[in-house]
Length: 205
Image (cartoon, rainbow, N blue to C red; front, side):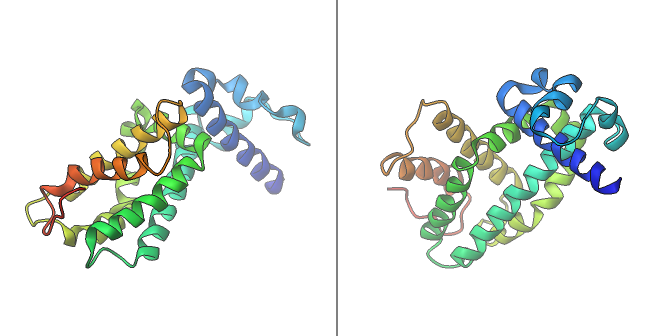
């Protein structure tokens, strides 16, 4: 029974991610959450499982976002490790980090569309903001040494984070091309957002 419930839990989380991504919260009704893809499953789901396994539809949304938040965090964490931190040649290392983060985001469109919809929703501030800030605290700390002492690093990175996703949504929607011309341009826009606060800024080229 525990294994069956875990299968159902995973199916509901996957359905929430897909439905929020393609149609927003209006699409992710209790009926759709339990019926989407049901013909591909080897078990039956009904709406009672949402309340039994998560407590409410909103709690299911929260768990889906938490899953995506951890995926994004670990992608960023791997990016920081891959570039060796940000000491020395800061702009180049930030660009290498940007390319890794950008590649991850563009390679996971559905999951990132869901992430963005939740991130800008009332559910995020009410249910997930505190956990999100705690999760990303390590990356904020990692980047703090490159900023001036008076800089509000968390606020700066929040602005860059949201701008990064705004650019990604434009690519998803076909309004912006992901190519060798636009990638450096996007990075320079993000870099200019932090230049004033960097200890040793290099002018964007």
